[in-house]
Image (cartoon, rainbow, N blue to C red; front, top):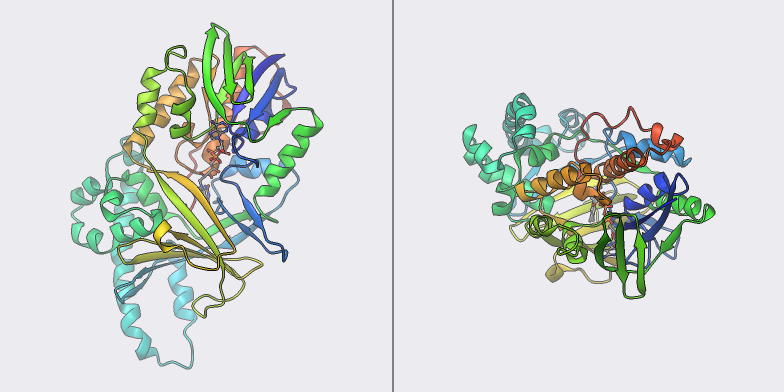
Length: 434
Ligand SMILES: Cc1cc2nc3c(=O)[nH]c(=O)nc-3n(C[C@H](O)[C@H](O)[C@H](O)COP(=O)(O)OP(=O)(O)OC[C@H]3O[C@@H](n4cnc5c(N)ncnc54)[C@H](O)[C@@H]3O)c2cc1C
């Protein structure tokens, strides 16, 4: 048996499932007192549940859906509706999927006159028409822009759409990502535009995403995998060609391999640059920027949103907000707020760190993936070694590490890994919302 330490129990927990007892003796280290990282279904005392972290899964999440099937869990399909509001009075409908405009027209309130609504809707339609012409241009160049990422603002200049972008595209993206318009301009075009082109078909895990983490934990407990909660890794040191020392405040232990499944900012803290030959990597990690994300959860009985929905609201200081709405079993609203605008009487507050998806982030991901190919005992997983910041990305990173490890030792590939073989060859898109 080869010993491996997996740092981080988000998508890292799936890596543990792929490896433990298949030639590997796995120890999972998790700094928090719960498993799952950004997967965090909240359960309130009155029985209501709501996703406290990641929530939206799109049809390109083929590997994650396979895992859900293997674990015996079920997916619900739902339609995400989205709306962009300019808080300086003008409301613009924002629908990533053109079909939604027809349902809106069909849903006219019969008591109001058509003319009353016409002015607003013509405005909306004009925006949509412009938006779709930009999306059309993007679709024509998508492959090129994915291979050679460029800043959104440079692409917008190339296609000569600055005015519309200043008025609409940048504010939409800034409120959506919780960044400023200036920061939105320095997002990579393919990433920023993917949000705008994603359709409204979404999936959720029935009963909440944490069900999948719970199911993995139950399996790992049954096969005696060691999971150390509330155990933050402080340093990883290479002690010989084939051995790594993992230090925590509670002690230290030696492993043949280490898989780091945490954010770039956490990874740079734990790598010992002198022994891990990683000083270059630490610089790359340092260039990846993160910003705080605060989520507040409230009872929401406002008329603005129908009951029995979870409404995601992201608010910037620039007077713009986006909402994404889905059916759920409670009327809880989930708001992305700043520290300064946390509402009162919250059911819960959750804090995370989000990466800035810019050129530095993509560069770091490419370097992580290239590093993994060395197959030298130190691996990078999680979304940091993926293609974007989606959950599917982290799941695929775990699959890639597992394949490398089985190859390294010439171990027999387990059935579970084989069942993903044909699924992660295509590129997955970013989730529709976050
Ligand atoms: C609020 C929010 C909403 C999101 N919504 C979506 C969505 O709808 N759809 C989607 O696809 N993606 C979404 N994402 C993106 C999300 O980041 C990914 O889906 C994914 O869950 C991240 O998994 P991960 O394994 O990369 O990292 P994480 O889930 O962050 O796991 C990393 C783990 O490492 C632990 N850790 C860190 N440092 C150490 C250390 N030194 N020692 C031990 N443990 C450590 C952390 O505590 C954490 O548990 C969302 C993210 C956030 C924050």
